[in-house]
Amino acid sequence: MDIEHSQHSRIAAAIVGGGPAGLMAAEVLAGAGVAVELFDAMPSVGRKLLRAGVGGLNLTHGEPREAFLGRYGRERDRIAPLLDAFGPEALREWADGLGIETFVGSSGRVFPVGMKAAPLLRAWLHRLRAAGVRIHPRHRWLGWDDAGALRFDTPQGERSVTAEATILALGGGSWARLGSDGAWVAILAARGIPVAPLLPANCGFDVAAPLAARPERSVGWSEHFASRFAATPLKSVALDFADAEGGPQRREGECMVTATGLEGSLIYAASSPLRELVAARGEAPVTLDLAPGRSLARLEEELSRPRGTRSMASHLQSKAGIAGVKAALLRECLPPEAFASPSRLAAAIKALPLALARPRPLDEAISSAGGVRFEALDEGLMLREMPGVFCAGEMLDWEAPTGGYLLTACFASGYVAGRAALARLAGGPAAATG
Image (cartoon, rainbow, N blue to C red; front, side, top):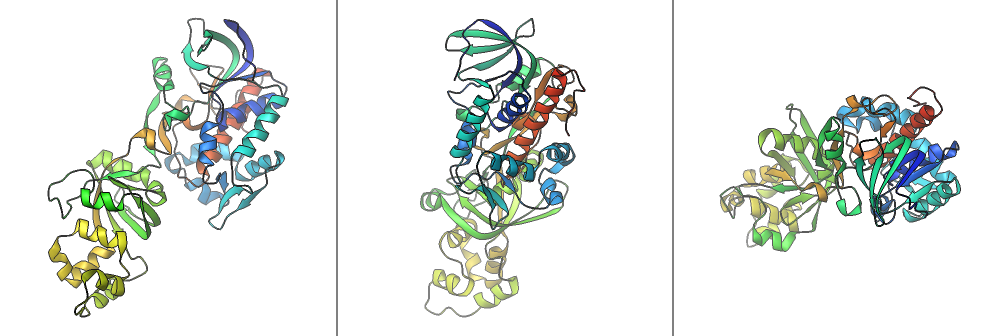
């Protein structure tokens, strides 16, 4: 990688941030013959992309467009034009152009055939370098100087760069050790750019429930339960709650018990409305259906059968299919007398009440909500108050569940910002979303 050592330089296009959005913007510009220089604070680019691919790189999702767009919640209409420009099919074609074949899994999620992120990133960086993109690692962005030049802290000292077009793709605030530390928020806010606070998304939650072992309200499980069941999967369950508008929400799947609460795909998928409930009410009341495949009437009938000399644990397992962590949850959350009442026990199995006290810290979250508000941007993602400066990726004010939706929108926003910057450099209209 080339590093320019001069104290000040003038360039055509500067990309700040080496994640999917920044790299895609660099590709769009370099592919049109623009000299592109990309700056990243970390020793190498694409670190969060590599981390996302540890369990299999979920690039996008194969579901129909309307369902896909629905995953972006309130920002659906803001994200739609980006996906019209560079959506799931375009992303798969792009990967194929890198020699990375993809497939649609049984869940509808789209993965590279080899499942890993590293081959895709290597092929991509090779193509970017061949197109003339110069990558500058260990360049931490400090903002702008009084003359409007970009300032960077580097191992060789501070450096300034004047660019005709700048694309900021600095990520959100989760997984700071991989480069997304949210330090840019204060820089843009000082310039009067409206930024929604960064909040954890796709995150776990701490519980705050009146547990049987501890009548007082406090955060986390009892020591007895946590020591035995932290990191234990909770499979085939359903989560029920009413959102902030009172609408019923139900999701089925699996999650995991943590030392202080719950995390995993079932919880991540509901993290946005759950986070809003906590903010509005101080907690999010939910119930867990521990046996979604059995009706309340059937459970009550089965549990009413005499258990004779069998233990309650054996009775629960044989009559209700409840054992292990599910049985332990009932013990954790119900008073002892509840186990003497088949109707009360059955009701708890179908709707075990919990209260979620708070989301886990932002740095633990898979992604973040909040960021540069779309009202501050034009159709090409250029800041209205800072002509020639574009924003892309997770630093924009949107969120989505895991399943390929996060990455797809990051790629798409980088593509749109790159096209808009290209049009500006060429003297055309600022927005180029087609």
